[in-house]
Length: 379
Ligand SMILES: Cc1ncc(COP(=O)(O)O)c(C=O)c1O
Image 1 (tube, rainbow, N blue to C red):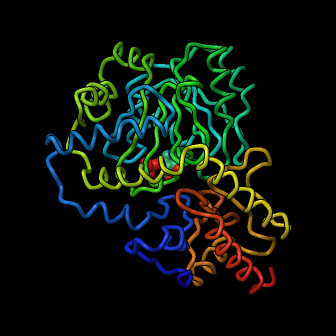
Image 2 (cartoon, rainbow, N blue to C red; image 1 turned 180 degrees about the vertical axis):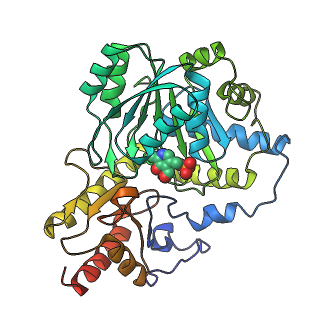
């Protein structure tokens, strides 16, 4: 085994990739650790995005993205971060009334986007740390008709995973509203069945459980959502999801894409497909379990409620008498990076992003370092 914290390259064909895998010490809830071979892919020469070479790269990416989203439909790619596509989804599919399901900072962001676009946006709000109860969604849909419902599948700010399948079922049973889903910190880490669960727009940037560099956002657009978009005017240019779909169908992107990030996505999709979606989901669930065992053994406290804890991000409370930023700083001195608390939770919580390429042995290294930091100050 190489010494901890070193990065060895996969250059020796005699050595198995498992032996040369770098030890990961980077546990931000995004961006996450990107494998050397994926970073190296970005060094390839940039080509024209209307060239035959780029077109064939683009077309080869589609089936692997469909496997990740579990869809037979189009998967589109925007150059820009996920927030661009949160905004595009609203502009492209909502004329007036939208229901936002809010349980943390990123679902609040989607609500603010809807308001800033002049939509009549209602909200179902649950306290930070809790998941959205599907029955609250049912009640809201019985009170009012909406064109769309927005949901953040995995709330990165609180480490909560929402019951997407159940909420999608309620939205279908109670309404004809479209379901727009932010899966930024869950895609390729938590089960998502775009077609089987009837999800209309599913979107994610690459820098979380996909473990690719930031710069692109991948998203789906159901036939229903496309029909709704076609009825709406003033969809903008960069924000028009139909424009993405039409260009995609003729083999390309709407504007000059981040070509180098496409190279990285291409390489990382091979890793994801090789591992397999079920295996990847299982690995992330096991990382949550490993964290849970550590938390339980030390009598630590979660910030997220039982039953809704995310497989990709653990949000923990600092022990009594300790400030979370001190713990983050202590880990940093030992060479480990974790996320601080988000927004109003900054002083009291910290977040471990155990997603993307993180393996059990990496997490074990972090948890040992965390023990060291907590013991140094008498826990
Ligand atoms: C759940 C969620 N949604 C949206 C965003 C915004 O993503 P981006 O920074 O790619 O715009 C983030 C970023 O952390 C997130 O975690």
